[in-house]
Image (cartoon, rainbow, N blue to C red; front, side, top):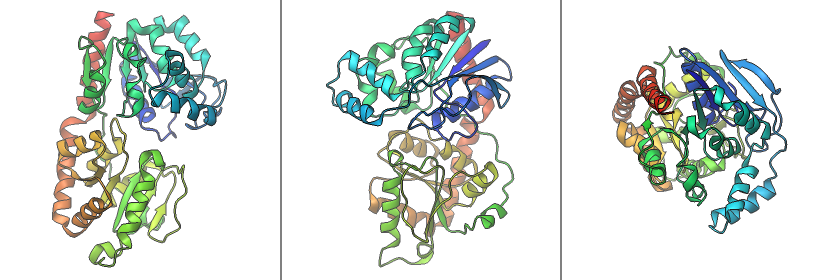
Length: 394
């Protein structure tokens, strides 16, 4: 089949979850299909500033077509329209304006879909909240598959999305929780699959990578965009309270918090809090394999891919119980613990540090779960099943 994958930004150096998910799926589909990624010139997810050259290129063996972003995001205007829409005071026009202001604003991408979208058998759209998906999917709705990457936040309940969620011909969901969330608004007749994301068996780990960057056990690891919206400010506060206790003993006396990924917030200067920025894949694997636990503090997720990668290395997790997706992943895998506040975070970290046999068991159970549910042949079989069904109906 000839397939287009539409996403707001695309590149091997982009850390975002939906963008990374799109890239992995596109690369794997390209082995058996004619795949073109349709995206923008943006790299920065806050401003959408021009970064890549417009036009055709190739990334990881996949054809990529980039369209220019015509204006950067105006954060003041975006904040004002968000206040209106999320307070349930927005008109239909104001809700549409929210998607324009959220961006990335690339009208030429819409023109391409309108004029050339039907050259593709199927058009897959990632992330419902962005300009290219909200305005682009209706233009090719007769062959559209939506990968909403939806989180349980106020946006998902705005009125205009009731009609929008009824438009695609098929859905690819990342978790059962996401399917339940969007399933309340999407007709049951639309074909759907819960696919998660594929994970390759782990490569051999080069532990010397940790020595090279001065990381020593024990440490708890956060991996991803370091941002208040991802719960990182709360994680740092919880950890600071944890190490400041009067009754600290054993491994808790020396445990560090290591954060790897691009930082969009200030971090305290503390010898037991390390921010590494972007790291290469070999260092990433070593960090995941060497951690006492992976911490996932985000209140909103549609799927945590780094959680799957952590389990792939046999490392247990501590996740924010207020996020139904993260809690659901941990419960299905029996791969770690969850917390709702600083006291529960401290208790979970204490338990994993002091009971290494239990921590290893959680990690092993997580790895077995990944092996059963998330190897690429399993994931691709679900995707191909959905694509075949939708193409037959289109």
